[in-house]
Figure 1 (cartoon, rainbow, N blue to C red):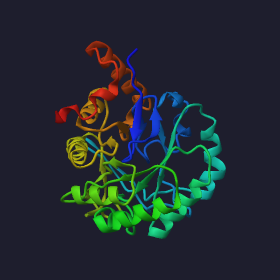
Figure 2: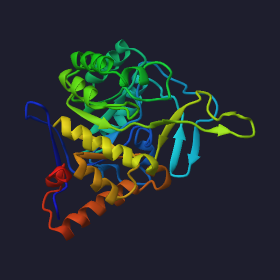
Figure 3: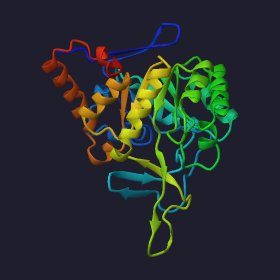
Figure 4: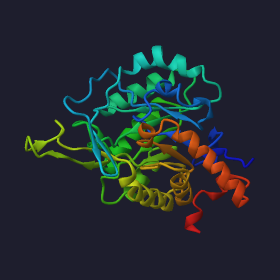
Length: 310
C-alpha cells in the first residue's frame, strides 16, 4: 500500500503534527464530528476539524440560513455553537475516545481578546492537536471579515493567540481580498504554524417574490464546486510566498479534486459542502488517493505536494 501519511513542519523545521493521511473536513460542514459517526469511520480520517467554537454560546443568524446554488450553496449560519465550556466538558471527552484521530478545533471570536481567551481555554485541555483560527467568516457582522481582510488585524489576532497557547495554530484565510500575499507574510511573521484556505466567497441571493435579499444578513458564504478554481488558485499563490504547511479546501468533491490541491501546494485537504451530499465522501477520497498512488507508482503521497510548481 502507498504511504499517505503527512508530516507538517513549522518554520524551524520541526514536525508539529503527523497525520496518517491528508484528509480532514472543513469546519462547519461536519458538526463536531460525532454527528457523522454512523456514516463513516472517523478513525480513518487524517484529522477531524470541528465547527467553530466561541467564548460564549451563539444562537446564530435569524431567518433562512441555507440556499442552494447551481454549483454549491450559500450559507448564513452565524457560527451557532454552545461555547467553549460546553465544548470542553461535553464534546471533547467523546472525541478523545476515538483512537489515533488528531483533533483540530476551529476558533472564532468578535474581538482579539475573545480569540485569545478561547485559545487559552483550549490550551488547558488534553487531546487537541491544533487550532484553526477563523478570521475570515463573512457571516458575522463583527470580527470575521474585519480581521481577515487586513494584514495588520490578522497579525494582531495571530499574535494574541500565539501568546496564549502552545498548540500549533493554522490561520484560516479569506478569499475576499485583492492580494493574499501581504496577509500571508504578516501571519507568518506573527507566529502562525500554517494556513487554512479558503473560507467561503461572499455572495447573496434575492427572493424575487418578496423582492428582498433571502438572508437577514444580506450577504452569505458561497461554497461548493463553484469556488474550487478560486480556492485552487489561492492555495497555489500561498505556496509561492510561504513554505508553512497549507490545509487546502474549497469545493473538493472527489479524489481528483483533492489531488489538484495537493499538487498546488496543500499538505492536507479539507472536504466541506460535499459532506452534505455524500456523508462518506471523505472515505471515497482516501480510497481514491490510495488507488491513484498505486497505479502511478507513487510510494509516498507527500512527494506530490507542490509538484505543479516544478
